[in-house]
Amino acid sequence: MENQHRKITGYRELNADEIALMNEIKELGPQIDAVILKVQTHVHKQRMKALYGQEDFKPSQNTAVNPLDPETLKRLEDATPERFAAMAKTEFQTGLMYLVRAVAQPTTF
Image (cartoon, rainbow, N blue to C red; front, side, top):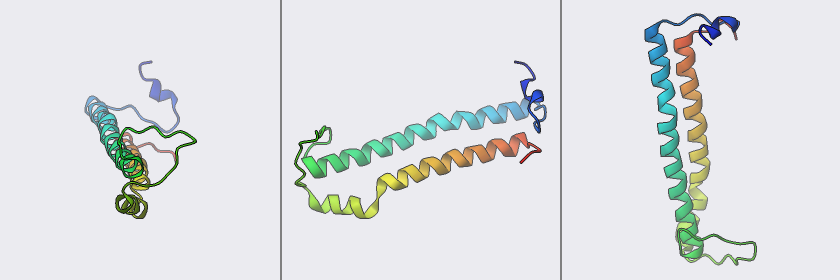
């Protein structure tokens, strides 16, 4: 496994500082993912409470939807927080990839 990257076209050997920096970048991923999951859970609970009156409600196929808090539900529909959380996840993943490439400096497209 040592020097495995030498066999990958376009990649160079990294020094100890570069490897440490790459590992530091990689450590951010799980931390950011945990925050994103907290946001997604928060929004889901808001939606469940607005629809069914309980944050932890598990609707079935036969559950009638008669919103208990239409004002909050309207705000959630207008603000699309699930979409923004998903976009944030993608952008953070992309940003971390860019940082890794900035350190690795591959020579291929």
